[in-house]
Structures are given as C-alpha cells and as structure tokens.
Image (cartoon, rainbow, N blue to C red; front, side):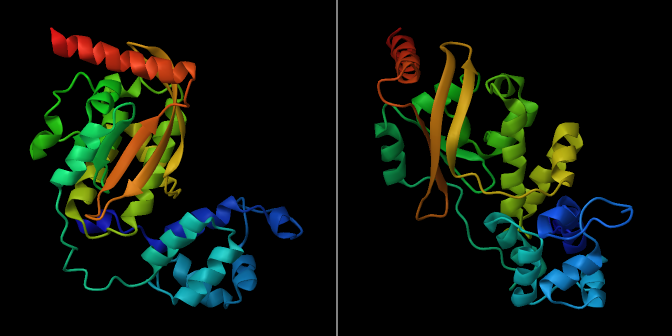
Length: 286
C-alpha cells in the first residue's frame, strides 16, 4: 500500500522535462517535436550525464541516483527549490524505511494555551498530513462552524484541511478562488509525500481523495510540488462576507505546524474578522 505515495522517479522527471520549452534553454526548436518540452538527450547534455543513464532513470530501470546527479538534472530542468528538494527525496534511497519517525498527534498544554490566547488571529495546529489537532474559536468560526468545536479531539473524526477542501461543500464554498486553493493543497501534499513515503495514513488520505474527487486525482497526476508556508487568501464567508486574510505557518517543537490567519490592521478585513468574534461572543452569552 505504501507505494502509492512513492512516486515513480521516472514519471516525475518526464513531466518536468515536458514542461521546459527548448527556447527557454537557448536551444533551437529545430524540426518537429512529437512531445512538448526538451528531448531526453538535451536534458542529459544540460545535466552532464550520459543519455543512456538519463533514459534509464526516466524509464525507471534505475530507481535511484546520487544527489550530485539529481542536482545537475534539477538545474537542467530549471526546478524550483521545493521541486529540487522533492526530486532529491524521491530519487535517493530511504534510510530505515521500516521505522517511521515517532510522531504524536496531540497538542501540548502550552501550545493549547497559546491557541486560546491568540484573540484576533484564527489559529490551528495541524500535523503534516493537515489533520487539525486543535483550533481556537476564531479558526473554528472561520472555517468549520458546521462541525463541533471538539471535533479535533476525536481522532476518528478529526477534520483534515485538504479533505474538507475537496469533499466538504461548506468549506469549499469559502474560497473566492477555489481552483488556486485546491492546487496549492495538492502541491503541498505532493511536497510532504517525498518526506513521508512510508506513512500508511498519508497513503490512505491520498487514496481516499483520489477515489472520491476527480479534481484531486487530476491535480495529483500532474506531480507539481511546492511548500505553501505564507501568502494571502480571499474568503467569501457566509456570516461576514468578503474577507482577505494573510496566513503563515510556523513549525512547532513537536513536529506539528501552527497555522494562523490574520487581517491587515485597521482594514475592513480586520473589522470583518472582529465581527466574526463578536458574533462568537453573542453565541457564547446566550
């Protein structure tokens, strides 16, 4: 089952090669090309490896390569930093694959206090699979008021950000630009799958999404990779309307991720976020 996440190195190289236009590399686009992008011999020449060796990698006759070779190929294919890291992860052998790193899916008391004290910030603690392990009231109110506040406490019903994004219409309708949001979800999942190729729960998540969402399956096949750690998102919230929030991620000591959303100070977006808080308080006081 675990192989579902261990992308075939060959198919990744092929997709990345087909993405590069010969003109970008200063090569003449001579003659007719059956497929878009660079030819194998061109990548091999740019990377300084033999054409035979490169072809073996792409045809998956050779499962791994040295980091030096992979870095040369990454340069030849003009990969981004995230794509290069991913290529190194899937292209080098896994050390001790039988022992997944111990990983506790729970939130420490001090992190829980921090979550509770972040008042005008929507904050949640996620594991790398994007399961929500804890959230503050504002995050809950922003993303998932249709779920119980204690949902993250119950492992078997724990909300997963990516799963909700594809399979929960309430969450899906929050994003003003769902196409971009869903793409960044999948590129992130692909990025972490390089590190966690032997995690059965991750394989299960990817399998479930592939079966239940054609959109996910199509994006997953593209094998695009990036780690989304900061940016801004536009929401269309059923209670407070349009809301533009900045987001950032911070790594916690326990290996989990603190994700927070905040508005620009003194902006209408901050006022809308505060309105969501007021709405919260009035609910609590009834």
